[in-house]
Length: 338
Image (cartoon, rainbow, N blue to C red; front, side, top):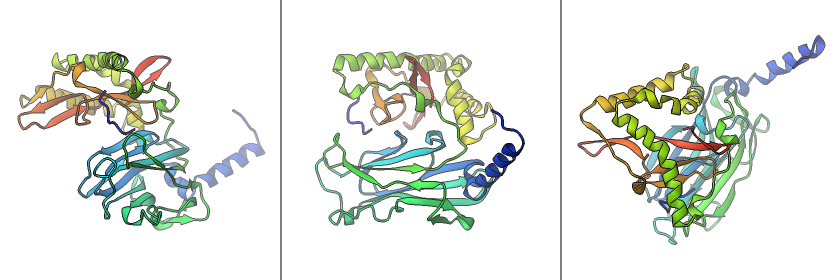
């Protein structure tokens, strides 16, 4: 979502058949996808603003017409174990204006293996070239719709396989005049668990609220943020670790940490910021933050004006070290999940 408002049992032969089928299904591409797959967004862009989503959660945002950018981002924490949706929204330099003739954005899905650094497959999912807009072939460099498999030597082969790419859909982005939205569904069965946010309550459209309701929603969300801010101010990191239980547990699974690995990183990072005299905790108030609702309407967070996380520390050079806090709702209860 673009933000323009702050505001079990078979015996005998049957069991043998199942074992054989299972063994076959974990050969070839599934040996990678069912081991420890690492999914990354490979992005390069120039001359346009953009937001790239995985399953309705923003992996990266850049709302101004950027100089050339190249980045790889791990997105395991957003991937579905069966089928995922990839999308980008792109913005011309000026609202209602045209795209620069040399503007582009290229988003590929990289598939790697946590246990084998030599494995890397590349699927060019969404490849936009503004020079081809008039001919309506601006996405022609994207991988064609169809079935694919991961063959030897890091080759992606068309014609068969468990990976299925659907056609790319294109719509105008209604929140910003001149912007375009492209998305596609990708079936890619893998060993990652189903993250809790997929089955969470649907959140309200905060951007359609009147000012009074919007401000009330901010204050309601800020209660949880203030717990973290107050604990950091009191040098009491231990008291807030239970809040991060789901976030840390799912993070360990997504990034293949040992149990408790992400909690240790978070705890150590927070404590180092508290202990370092060069860093000062910002004193945030509800009036200084706005709501960011992810496009899936399952996840919400509070951000400050430059799309930075609301809770963080600043040093004398105005560098900002922050801690993301993204909530979902289950049976009406807010849960810190990312």
